[in-house]
Structures are given as C-alpha cells and as structure tokens.
Length: 372
Image (tube, rainbow, N blue to C red; front, side):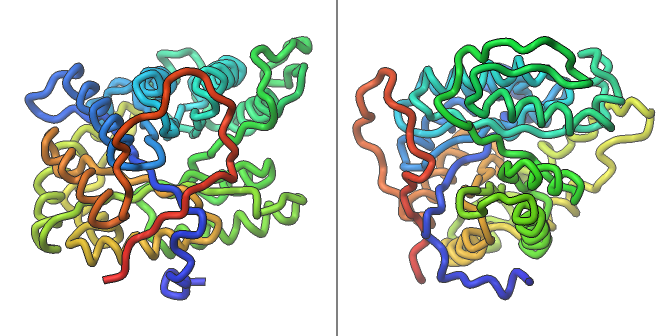
C-alpha cells in the first residue's frame, strides 16, 4: 500500500490533533526562556482548540532542554483544564519501568485521565553512562523494560519482577482503573514488532514520509493480529512538522531559516561508542521535512493534513510548530494551524478545575481540514 493509495475521505473519523513540543534552545535564548516558551505554546494549544500537547525529552543537548517529559507534563496538566498532555517520548533505557509506571498512574489519577505516556528506546548516548544503565540496557533491555511497564499499567493489583528487573510481587499503588495505553516510539521494524506483540500503539516520528509510515503500520497490523489483538482498539500517533503561511514559498523559507539553528543541537549528542553523532546536513534535512509535511499555504497544509489523517490506524496527529523560531512566530503558527487549517473551535472559558472521572479513550472529537 502506498501513500497515494490512502483514501483521504477518511479524514475526521476520530482523529485528534495535538502539538508536539521540543522546547529547543535557540541562539541567544536561555534554558529558562526555552522552557517558558514551550509552556506558553501548551497553553495556546488549549486556548485554540487542540486536543492535546506532547512533550519531547532529551538530555544534555540544546535541541531540547526538557530532561523529564513527565515533569513538564505534570506542570502543564496543572496549568490547563481540558487538554490531554503526553510524553513523546520518555527514554525508557534510562529509567526503571516501575518508577515511570508509578508516575504515569499518579498523573492519570490527578489529571482526571488526561495524561498520555509515550516511551522510546533512545540512543547509544552518554545518558546511559550518566544514569548507570549502560549500553546493554539500550541494546538488549528495551523488551524487558516495556513488558514490565505494560504489566504495571495493566490494572493488575500486584506485579512481580522479571529476569532483568528481579523483585518480589508488590502492590500497584496507585492502581490504574484499567489498562493505560503506552505509545511506543518506533523507527525500526524490530520495535514495531515488539509493540505489536504487546498490542501497544505506535508513535511515529517526523523523519519518515507517509509511504514509510504506511509500511510500518501495515507490518504492525499483521503482527498484532497474529498475536490476537483487536486493531479497532489501538490508536497510533504520528508526528508532523507544520508551518502555515500566506504562500508555500513563505512557509518553506521560514522553515529553512528557522529550523537550521535548532537542528544544529542534534550534533551535541555524545555516543558511547565514540562515533560522531548528528551528521545529517541540517539544510538537507529541513528540505526533506518541507517536502513531506504540511508546510505551505492553507490549501497545501489542508491537503497534507488530510493525507496524514488517513494513515491506517492513526488516531492522533502531533504537529511540531516551532520550526520557524521565536515565540511570537510560533504562537502565530499555532493560531493559523488551528483556525485556518484544522477548523478548531477556540476555548473561551475553561471548564471548572479539579479532579474529574477519567476520560474514555473512545470519546474523540472528529476533526479535519476544510476543503479548498
């Protein structure tokens, strides 16, 4: 199946729209400014009608200065009233899965069911050395980590350890009312197969085009079905860069100029094997992203969003809106994307604060771009 074969008429059938925030530090900004701006973007997402916000997690690099997506999510959950807030993604190779599971269950309860947990393997970075988990945890431990995390969030009253994480059975406190979904960031077929065996939804990144994502999603569907999982109950997430302007040329130029300084931060990764990191040319990568994502006029962005929303099994679209750089241009991009492309209704008055019953995963608000 190719991207061209996807039926764009499926757009709007239960697809939810979110922002994907990097909290990247640009030249001249402080770490505090980068984090404050990302927080403002999250507040703007709620005001303009988005369904949620997902936060990236990085360590020791300026490409993203949020080292704990869970902590940022907790802060934003406290500052909002209606939107979902997720992690895209917590680096599971650096964390004990039970500790992360406890935090996820806690935020689920405190937020009335608005927290969403996404996890990833990460990379062979110096993080593994700093946090003491090591390369073996990265290369061989992701399966065990994900399996234990999924069991902890399954709703079982008691959970015991495994070979890599040996411990006696202990009570799950706070205990989720039922299975909490865990989105798995996937760029390889091995990770897709692992998530599919557990029936956990995928979190697909920015770098892949629609055809590549369709291949991963089709592979997931085959593997999950062979393991007895019902695909109807699994809603994947897909990340896309979005930049809206008066013309296609203006949007592309804004991304070309604004994204390069942010991408330069990727070169700050330090690999444990000593190999250089982040060698992809930022200008080439920016051109690639412009070609495959909703970057351009309202019309071009609507068409690109419609194709993305028609990806098989995808129920969450995450839009990276910080490419052009600067607080005001980003806030303007969020408003344009919400109103001119997605037809979202602004939230004039937030609901009453306080804990509420957990929201149902099936209670989705259909949304899609207008024709034109």
